[in-house]
Length: 134
Image 1 (cartoon, rainbow, N blue to C red):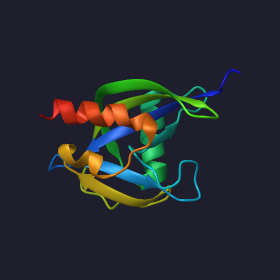
Image 2 (image 1 turned 30 degrees about the vertical axis):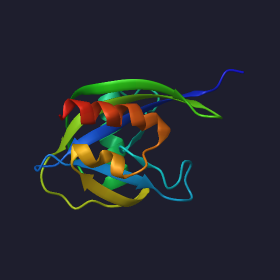
Image 3 (image 1 turned 90 degrees about the horizontal axis):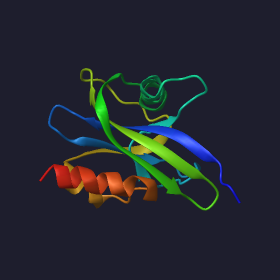
Image 4 (image 1 turned 60 degrees about the horizontal axis):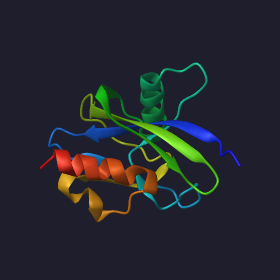
């Protein structure tokens, strides 16, 4: 059986102190209660960078600056697969975050990212961030 693959973008968003934004999905959501880097699906005819900026505004109500691609992975869940492009980003200026798709956020130093339980699709990228930060 061929699983449907969702094309996803996610932001590894650092603040001025170098901490990385980690977000927890609401419990009534697919993968509810899991931690992730914020982002979402790429819409038809949308460029990945445009999708990421749109998703971050929708989910968190903030504007970001995208620096570069950090990682790209494919991961298979039981019912579907995801292909995720992870971008290094920063917050344009100090802005108040809204929790529209998540129920909790944490700004974590890179070496503490494993303090929370990231979704399986994000784990390799978490490990790569921690390795690069040493």
